[in-house]
Amino acid sequence: MKKILIIALVFSFTTINFAQTEVSGINFPSTTTFGQYEVKLNGAGVREKFWMDMYVGGLYLTNKSHDADAIINADEAMEIKLHIVSGLISSNKMTDAVEDGFENSTDGNTRPIRQKIDQFKSFFNDEINKKDVFDITYQPGIGIVVYKNGKESGRIKGLEFKKALFGIWLCDKPADKDLKESMLYL
Image (cartoon, rainbow, N blue to C red; front, side):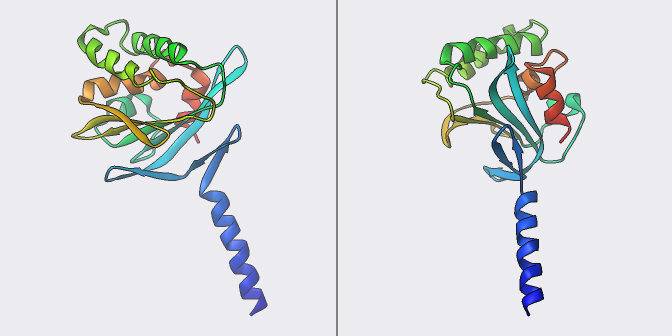
């Protein structure tokens, strides 16, 4: 009986360790849910600037993939989870970074989605603090739904906008090349 109890305890601790991934002190669960969807952690990494960690980001997909273009173009539920780890990130810095990301993601052709970009940037108007968590989800038929610390910030319809948005992290000129690689290969 003792052996069975010990084996059960060892198995439960082992299962707990595999149920999440730690990146730079941030734990990412192996799966997460939003709306009617459950998605799996595809990969996670750190966004650095001038050798300082700014945020830790994780990519969640319905079906794991290493193909950035396929992920960008997929009309499937997915999420990018951003954990702010630096007090240097402000609302203004975040919206500037998002603007640059859309420029890179669309090869400078932001005009067709300009109104949606501006709406998305407004989700970062409130003060951003260290330990804030942003969940940027895509839900087919609904569009982008953004949450800050579990509270919905807003929604934006359209697959084309989703492609440009996820391109910020996954396009040929991503926000951070190492983060892109980490999101694609766990």
